[in-house]
Length: 187
Ligand SMILES: [Zn+2]
Image 1 (cartoon, rainbow, N blue to C red):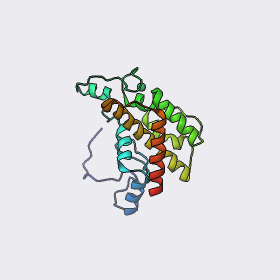
Image 2 (image 1 turned 135 degrees about the vertical axis):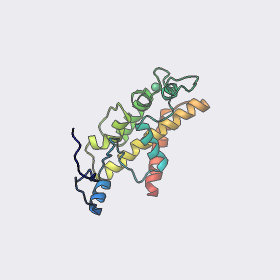
Image 3 (image 1 turned 45 degrees about the vertical axis):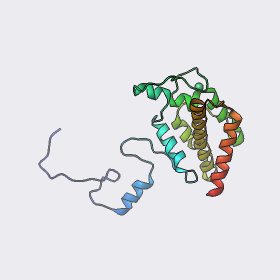
Image 4 (image 1 turned 90 degrees about the vertical axis):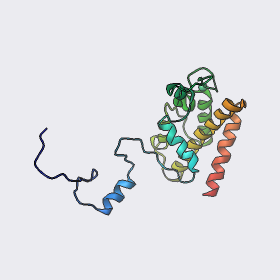
């Protein structure tokens, strides 16, 4: 690579143009691209911000699971999944491969009358509405229900971990449905 004897220039990544155009900025903002290579979460307008931020962090594995605490050299009494006590408590286990999570997704697929699905990562969960080629309102609602599902699983996990409250799948399902209906009715 050789350096040329010319002045440096700013170039728009999206268009390779040198000039600033408002329409270029608008196009960049409306695209689901992150020019750093990060995953861009599809927004769900009818859900509370806390749910969106929660799954956004979960996709990056930034939640304080047992495995994450061990990685950060934080002393924790137990790092196994509190639901099954069988596997390390990682984000993918908690929301995808754990029996409790699988059962929740099974109930949701039946409730939403959508084919049974298997997920192996939080990103899979967040992309499911696209993989299933859903469109319009159905896509938006299903996407939101999956996010609410992750949020309610995490709340059940916290209740078990910190309050020793027994986990009941039916109760998690009820919470997902009531929170989903409540937020949809508000928006
Ligand atoms: Zn588990």
